[in-house]
Image (tube, rainbow, N blue to C red; front, side, top):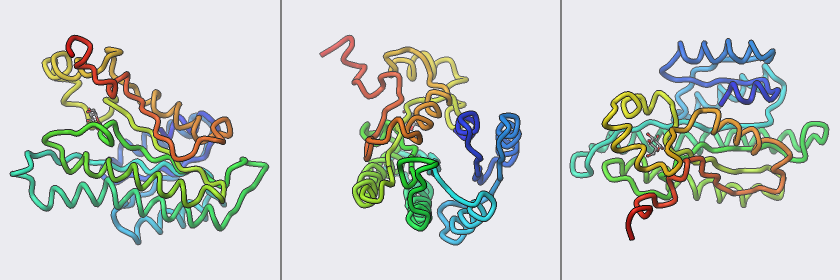
Amino acid sequence: MAIGFAKAGADVVVNYYGDEAGARHTKSAIEACGRKAILFKANVAKEAEVRAMFSEAVSEFGRLDIVVPNSAIQLNAPVDEMTLQQWQQVMDVNLTGMFLTAREAIRIFKRQGIDRSISYAGGKLIFISSVHDIIPWAGHANYAAAKGALMLLMKSLAQEVAHLRIRVNALSPGAIRTPMNVEKLTTPEMFQDQLLKLIPSKRIGEPEDVSQAAVWLASDQSDYVMGTTIYIDGGMTLDPEFIAAG
Ligand code: BGC
C-alpha cells in the first residue's frame, strides 16, 4: 500500500508495530521511487501514540492529504472458547485503532482546509476493511464484528464531513497475499481445497490489487465517491457456493 502511494508520487509515513524489518524494507522501496519515507512505531489502540504519530507526520512533511487506517489482527476461537482478552484486543486494534486514526486525520484535514493546487478534496480517508464487513465468519466473531462496525463508522464519518469535501471511503479485500494469510497460502490443502473454492476468479489477490484501488480513491478521479466500500475480492462476495448449487 505504502509503496503503491510512493509510485503515485506521495511521500509516506509508515506506521508499524511488530514488524520493524518489514517497515524498513518498505521505507527503502519508497525511497527507491524517489519519495520520502518516515517510519513510526505506534500502537494505534493508544490515543497518545496515535497523536504523536500525526504530530511527527505534520512536522516532517508540513501537511497531510491522505490517511489509510489499515490496522488489523486476527485472534480466532470458537465463541464458547473466546476469551474476553481475544475479543478486546481485536476490538482495540481493528476498530478503536481505526477511530483514533480517523479522528486525528479529520482534525488535521479540518485545520488545513482545501488547497486547490493539491486536490478538489479537503483530505481523503481510506479505511482498509474486509469482505467480513458483510460475510459472517464462524470462529472469527471478534474479527467480523469489528469489520461490520467499521462499515458504519466509515459511513457515519463520510456523512459527517462530506460538506468539508473530506472524502471517506473503504476498501474491503478478500484473501490477499500478505503475512496474515501465510498459513493458508503455504498449506496446499487449505489453499486448493478451501480458499480457492471461495474465489470465483480462482486467484489469490496481490497487494497491488488493493493499492491500485487506494490510489484511485485518493485521486481526484474519484472526487464524487463518498462513503463507499469497494470489494477487492476476486468475487468472494458473490456467494460462490451457488455456482454449483441452488
Ligand atoms: C482476512 C483473510 C481472509 C479473507 C477472506 C480477510 O479479511 O484477513 O485472512 O482470508 O478475509 O476470508
